[in-house]
Structure formats: structure tokens, C-alpha cells
Length: 337
Image 1 (tube, one colour):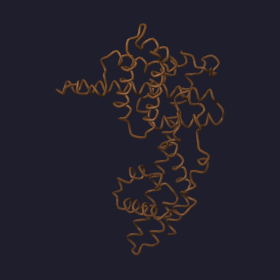
Image 2: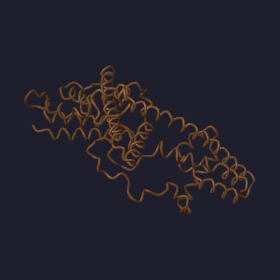
Image 3: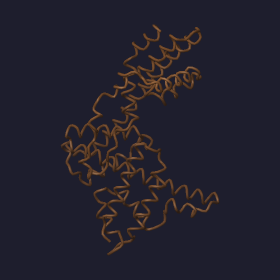
């Protein structure tokens, strides 16, 4: 017990750092619109959420929580050493808490045989080393995410003065879009989105409305890019099906890639959100229009089913892209004709 308690005490900062870093990298902010400028009045946090994220450590765990920790400790203690890093990473919020290490100490103290005591002591040491690696890796990842976001933000600045002018000009937006395109798509992940959300939260609290607008624009550009890429990948699936002898028309309900409405949607996704209303007004059937409102709505809905709903359920990528497409649907519905 003394040994494990000593390990716990000496590495307390490691556990706290891990919890805080992972809360930034992997957790989501409370549900709130994060794309459309129409949502400025939305409340960000409930009053009850302003307390410490570590308040759970100030109370005794419930019997069910103790049972869950015991099961996890037993599983980790009996897992091969090479499986420990991935197992700890998947459950880092639990494993990285001081309460978890206190429970290991309690079980070691209660153990009747030396083998079990040694196994639990080794487990505590191995988890500490694994958490230190997780913290280091997470810090590196956060640094890279921040660099990517800040590079896009800088692209919006005036070249001569370095200042930001709101509303953003088409030239500024185009520079931001080009900068986003240069970033490796694999880096446009949950960490990238969470970094933007964290920046936006801080900017909104500090009253930096201009920076909030810039960050919203990054999310708009991101969503348009990813949905467009998803549609292209879906087209690739159809082509692959045809090559494999599968009737590609059997996939028609998922997406229609050879129609005026599909071409129009691709054009919309490549354009700035501020251009949507004008583009929709000139394209919806009427004078000079090429598609009906119903056809375009159907194309958007098929895209949401085939692309957005196929993302990891509840992920920030899904939330951002879904909100982006819902905004587009609302704009279409508001077009007269």
C-alpha cells in the first residue's frame, strides 16, 4: 500500500495533466451551433457547468463505480504487456484519475497473497509509464493542431498590416481555403476540430467577435471540403461497383452523381457560404434556373445519408458537417419558387 500510494503521490501531476489534455483533445464542448453566423445568440454553457471538471474526485465513488473500476483493474492486470498502451488510451479518463490509483492501492492492501500484491504494484507502475507517454503524445498532437489552425487564421490577415478585417473579403476567404487545402487531410481530425472549438469558446468569452467569425469560417470551409470529398468517395464506390459487376444504379438511392442537382450541389459546396443565397436564387427553377427545389433538397438529403451519417456517430466531424448541411437545407427552403 505504501509503495502504490507513493507512486500515486509522485505522479499526481501526470494524472491531472492527462485528464486535462485528453479532455481538450477527445471530449466535446456542450452541444451548440458552431457554424452559422445566425446562431450568435445561443448560450454556450449552462450555469451548472462552470465548476471544476475534477469535482467527481471530491466524493466517494458509488458501488457501481467501484465495481467498474475493479473489473477494469482486473482486466488490465491480466492483459499482456503489449496490450496495455492501447487499453489505457481507450479508457484514459478512468485510468488516469487519482481515484483509480487509490482503488489499486486498496485492492493491493486487501490481497491475501504476495503474487496478487506484486501484480497490482506492477500494474500501477506500468500505467504510470503509459500515461506519461500518452501525455507526451497528446501534447505533440495539440501543438500540431494549434499550428494548423493558426496557419489558417493568419491567411485571413491583411498582408500589409497583419490585421484582420471583418467581414471577410472573398480574397481573404480564398486564401483561407487554399491554406486549408494544403493541410494533410489526415490532420483534419477530431483534434483539429476540438482545437477550433476551444479557440472559439475562449474568443467568445473574451468578446472577440471578429475571431469567432474567422473560426466559424474555418469550420464552414472544412465542412464543405469534407462533404465534397465524401461525395467523391461515394462516386468512387459506384465506379468500383460497376467494375466489379454490381449494378451501380442499385446505389442510386444513396447518391445521384450524374444530374444537374448533383452538379449544383458540388458547386455550392465549393463556394463560400456568403454566396449561397445568390447561387441558389439563380439556380432554382425559375428564370434561368436549372433544378427544382425538390430535386436539390433530395440531393442534399441523399448526401447526408451517404456521407454525413456514415461518420462516427456523435463525433465532432459528424456534428460540424451535419450542421453545415442543415444550414444549406434551410437556405434552400427559404428560396422562393
